[in-house]
Length: 500
Image (cartoon, rainbow, N blue to C red):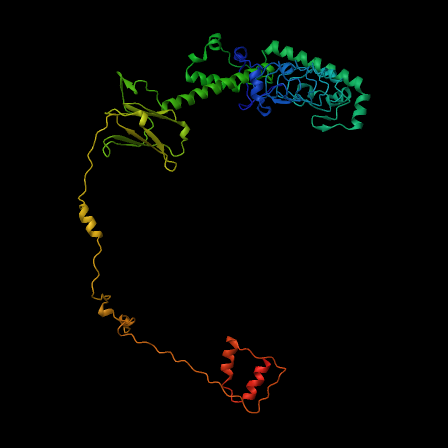
């Protein structure tokens, strides 16, 4: 009966169990905690139907039955709860998860009328007869008790099935009708066996606590190194790093029994180690960015400071009346995390908890200053006008007078000489483009010859048919007649015209 826990699951040294348990921080179920876990319901707790309070180091169930009357699903696994209580008013509760707690007895669930599923995995339930209080929960169909001391008793499954005939699934295994009938028939003898085993368990547990101080050893005569009272009561803050390491090794390597006190001590030890790691990380961060209170100001005078070593450029020569400051900040740093403070004698920029400060020799005007940042490079540009503006004369350029400018606009009279396009004789081709357009004096009129169509006389043997309507010549037919006039045979001409 020896339990050797690993460092991942946790264990504790016997000599400091009492000290760690007494100093354990107790977490209560408060309204703020419930509202924080009720974000899916917009923070409303009166209409809450499901809530998860797992891994919160809760030691007692309280206030839930007062604030969440309509709760249907309640997750309380991985806490330090010792007793099932204050859930009788949850009439709509259907699923209760109390796995990985310190529950030692099934109780106070009789009034949860709609309870359908109960999870008590890995607790400390040794009094198996306590499940008889669930006989009135007629809707209870699924139950889990794996990892409890009672699950190792002989005829454990038969007793649960016979005591709670409404159960349809036990520890993830379906309950058959044959199995239920056999269990009910042998319930009397099974119950006697269960009572005897649980009483024997309680006697052995009491002897173990009184005889060995809570430790079970398989080797007779095995003893651990004793420690003095001064070592136990010595505060951790007074221990050297070597002593802390030695105590941690003894804590995790000493084999102990699995009890509710053990589990509480493990939680306490894990919290201490977690807090120690956070302090170390915090110390590393402060070493990277040291707090220098005298750097920003000394004897009433501001000093230059660049904690992050950001590249910067200060330009006060191009423009006498303004000062330009460019600071190269990280490209992917959000602009909302940058704080710029412009004062008449200095500028302070705070980003990522690091300060950049530069002092000016002249006074500037903060109200008229501007600040811009590039979205591509992340460079921050500050343009700050000086308080005392200096009038600078503008340099006049050597420009021509007004009369000279106007004289250039006067149009010159066109000359009588003809201007020709100058062509390089070496690149001159055979074509002469200069004679494409002739002068008006040399141009000649082009005479257009017109053909005169002579009308032929009608032949003597032509007979005028009165049935034929008179023929009216239009423009098109006139043109066609002129074309046909060249036909020698006038009879053919008359025949064609008649067809038309």
